[in-house]
Image (cartoon, rainbow, N blue to C red):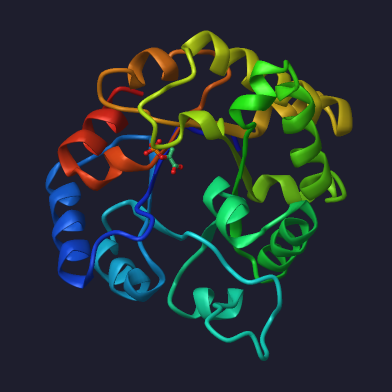
Length: 249
Ligand code: PEP
């Protein structure tokens, strides 16, 4: 079901006390109406975050998950482990996972399937590098990232997917895609989903924009027809900034 969503990816930030303080500060801002608000703290603070957000309407997601169900994968976290502490959503395919940890389309396809096998929803990230955009290859790159990881899924699985378009050149750089560039890509993505499945499914999928969204630019980006919200990095670490972004939807 298409909804307005603002998700905060905390990355490798916030220890236990900071996690607790940031959640308290977000809760103090009260009701976010019909907008789905998701935060993604580090693995070690997920259980605590689930407890602290209970009954607040704020959802908690993991930032990653292993593609196997269990076994000899030192340092990794399985979907069953996430479920066991109350996690219902996982972010997969973030560009930092792709760039620094070698995640590719094939790995991500397995991760997505494993998440669904454990009834965990997926926020699936993808986006082009600067060279791709400069060489006018950005649509092809985005198309192959989505198709390779997601298009083997049955239509019924799509109600558990949120897409997050994050041009790599805009992540953590202060450089943002213009609202027009975001809209153009989001409309393209919706068209891809329509061609692969159907118009109803394409209209139902939420597509978030990510890449240097701040209080000052969120409203204009979110006002675009095919932009259903944002995946926020740096600005999600400030309760005031994150709240302003949520309220600008
Ligand atoms: C992100 O890491 O997903 C992200 C969008 O980061 P930032 O908002 O800091 O660009």
